[in-house]
Length: 285
Ligand code: ZN
Image 1 (cartoon, rainbow, N blue to C red):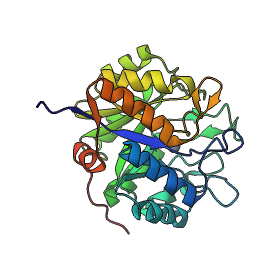
Image 2: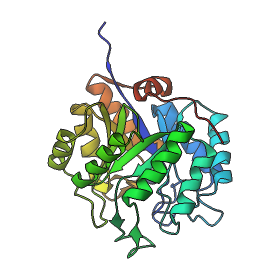
Image 3: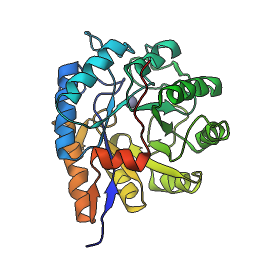
């Protein structure tokens, strides 16, 4: 039998913008995050994208909370742990980078400056200057953490090229197109934008697609059809369909798995995803 294409599904459970106010099912505390991660793993997610929150539900870069979450998830399954370095609007660069001290296998790396237009920190800059991006990338390289390079518009692919030229990232280069953010500097979540972004990828790149809000499902399907991977979850979209809140992150994962299987595509296991992305064992400081 012919081997089926493997789809790496990332579940972004929490994020740094929304809260239980918008969807009471959004996991915030470590136990809730670990439970949601395990449910998503059981449905076919290979990677869990993690944002830690403090006791009051605010984004935090506290490596102890990240480590606690890692331990809780690790006690249940071998899913790939991917921590944010975008954090939330209340965190500066020095606080965002500390999640790396918890030594995840992967971490997000935002590839350019945005300006927040929604959420509790609307009106503030989401700073990701070139020197800041290089600093994040260097810290990840030192530890063997694989960056998930988040690209919100076409110009940010220049920053991917910059990291490649400076050998701060290693192939395969893992790029996540985050489309449909309402922040200034992001492009709408359309298939046309996805196609033109894909055409600009460097050689040896593997791409993932994150559609925000109503673009989550259509862009996930489009990505499956053109050879990309998929991220879903309540960080990006709190609805199952228009007017109906998602009951869980796992519900969103299960839907893309059903669609993938109809297309003859099988979700990658965490170990298959490790091989596809060239993950290494992480050297903790
Ligand atoms: Zn995130």
